[in-house]
Image (tube, rainbow, N blue to C red):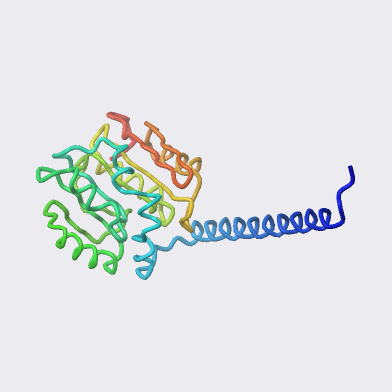
Length: 231
C-alpha cells in the first residue's frame, strides 16, 4: 500500500528533525566532555556565584540530601568530614544525623563559600558543625580522627588528587569510609570508572556503589591495616 505524498512529506520532516536533534545532542555531549577534560587538566573550584545553582530546587529534587545520606550508615556520635560543602546542600541533613554527640567538619577552599554557609548553619541552630578553610591536600587534623569522609561533586576539581586522597586516608580511622559521588549534570563530571581508579591507586578498597540515572556514589574503605598504604 503506497503512502500519500502528504504522509511521505511528514515522515521526511520527522526524520530531518530527528537528525537535527541527534546532532544537537551529540554537540552538547562533545562540549561537556571537552569541558570536563579541561577541568581535569586545569582544575578550578566551583565559583562562588554558582552557589545558587548548587542549591537550586532542581538539584534538591534529583539529589535530595536525606535520600542520598540514607544510603550511608551515619549515626549519632560519629565524626564526619565534609570536603568541599559548597552551598551546604548536604550539611544540615548530615549534621542532624550525627546528633549533639557527633560532629560535622566542613572544609572548603573558598571563604566565599564558607561565609554564607556559616550563616545558614547558625540560622538552622546547628551546634555540631565546624567550618574550616583548607585545601584537600593539607588538612590540619590528627591521624585517624574521622569515621567517614564525604566528597560530593568535588574530587575532579582537586588539583593533586592522589595527594588529596592520601591525606583523606590519613585522617580516616582504619576501616573508615570515604564517600565519593559525582553528578552527570556537573561540568566536572567524570565516570565512576575513573573515580574508582583514583581511589584504588591511593590505597582505598571499594566497599559499595550506588549508580543512578543522574549521579553515582562510591563507598571506599580505608584498610584496617595496610603496610605503607597511609601514614
